[in-house]
Amino acid sequence: MDAFVGVLPMRVRDGGSTSGTCSSSGRMRWVIASAGKDGYKLNISEAIMVDLEGESLTSISGRPIASIQGVGDKTEKVLGALGLKTVSDMADYKFYKIARAIAVLESVERDGKRPDNSTMNIDNAVDKEFESKSLGDICDAPASALQGISEEKGELLASIGVNTVRKLGEWKYFQWAESIVDLSKFEETK
Picture 1 (cartoon, rainbow, N blue to C red):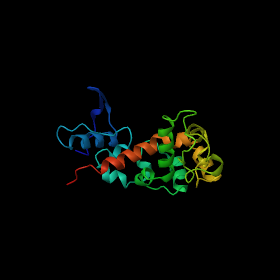
Picture 2: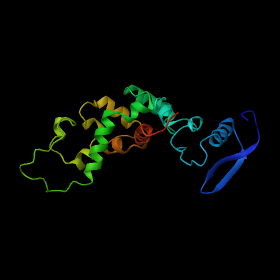
Picture 3: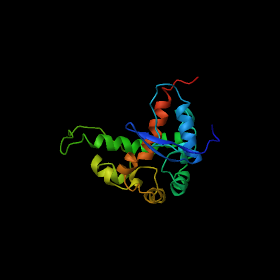
Picture 4: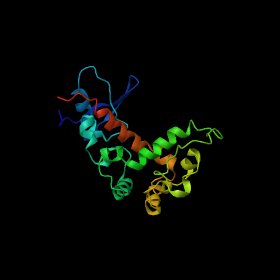
């Protein structure tokens, strides 16, 4: 079936289909989709490269970061310079996790509501100058406000559009990687 060249359904959305002459990756998508578990509709086709759409989440977790759709050469080089090589590395990136936690909790922070006797802090996560700031102020700060991200690494992140702590915590490529790895733990493999 891999050798078939012709007109095949390329992608189906909301019950409709788009037809056209398929590339080898289009054929592969169709072959993979038809070889899966009967009745299953789960897919993450918008988050991973086409040639991986038939693989397990566990397998994708160990793949290079370029397996995430939208991670091009520039982004791969930047993330590589930060020590990230695999989808799992992205999911476990310490600074993404810190930034995500700050961004999530920022939505429940209220001005003037901190009790005078509160000892709550994230001093070991942010640089000294940001220790007394609100979560909102930290979210709007450069990624280098996080303790351990140098100015140089902050500039690398900014070069791919991740120029604040908030953007680091909400960057879809980190979120996709984290979700793939998290859900792989619940995958039935045989």
